[in-house]
Image 1 (cartoon, rainbow, N blue to C red):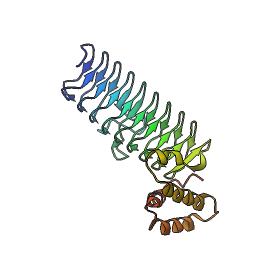
Image 2 (cartoon, helix red, strand yellow):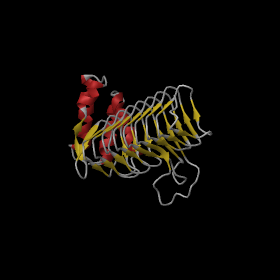
Image 3 (cartoon, rainbow, N blue to C red):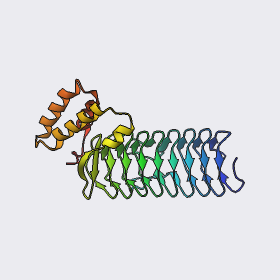
Image 4 (spheres, rainbow, N blue to C red):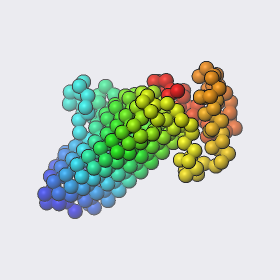
Length: 256
């Protein structure tokens, strides 16, 4: 299943049913799990681990050195889960020693053409990066988040689970879970209600989240007072606990 025109390092570890297309390069310290398909002209350098059932399209580059001027060749790594799709010319870099040394991607994510994940990022599960969506270093992306095409996210920013970033958004602050943002700079535009319905949230849960949005963004409360009110509601509305926990971890202030 390895094309004779591919270049695979003897130090790479590939499951027996991995497919590698012509002119692809698999470097040393790369581990690729079962049923993964690497198309033509892709490059995977290590240390990098890919799980099972991933698909890497042509001209994608995974696991190469971080684009960081402080990087001096220290041993860092990229870890990728299962069933991810990396479309044409997608780039994902390894971590840095002054970060946590690892870029980590979960499972069931879609990275469309020319999307970019920089060093030390943490990506959850079932996210979608539309064409040319880009992350700077140390960004955290929660489960089910969607980044529209040409979105750019500032380093160290956090994007909460189920958030929706409209196309062309420039995101320099943290985006809470469930929220839709758009613009340059990105500002909130309500709750990602349609996405929540598609993922099985009940009408009552969505109403609770919409009420939480009004408390956070429409009642002109101090953030501390809004969070206190949300924490009280979360005792009986557990879907709000994700929002309260995220705000407590925010380091770049919230998109407002």
